[in-house]
Length: 183
Image (cartoon, rainbow, N blue to C red):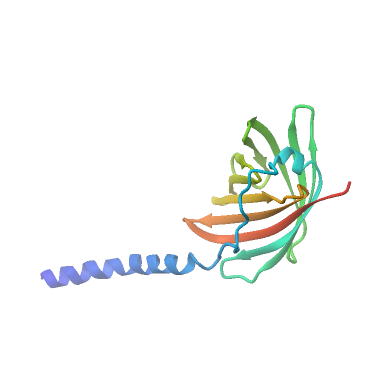
């Protein structure tokens, strides 16, 4: 009788073990780009300055179990008299129709910003450390996003690495070069 109970307990654990193996296997499917940019003390990335005016980003989105997709993001940012950045973006993702999204960002303290994003669920938090900006928010559907933007030495371009997770697993990574363009 004890052997039957032991076998039943082991059978109940099989789905849990299989799920754990699946998560471990898939967690490495969407890898981070190599090498990651170095964090530097200068130039300091001020999101209100960098995203004021026109910007254009071009990159590649890699989703779990999918082929890479080319992405273009065209932005136009305006900083008002209250020092709030409103950034309107047009996102072109592969063959999908263009979509619009809007950011509103304001400075809370010397290295901390808060704001909103039209396709985020809840607030957006931004911290700056030298040339690196970390943006954190949750997408609709409960997907946590960590976005890292590294300002280049020229102050006119940046490298963007956006990581989307679900259940602690990377499910998508966008690697993009953003440049300030003329008005």
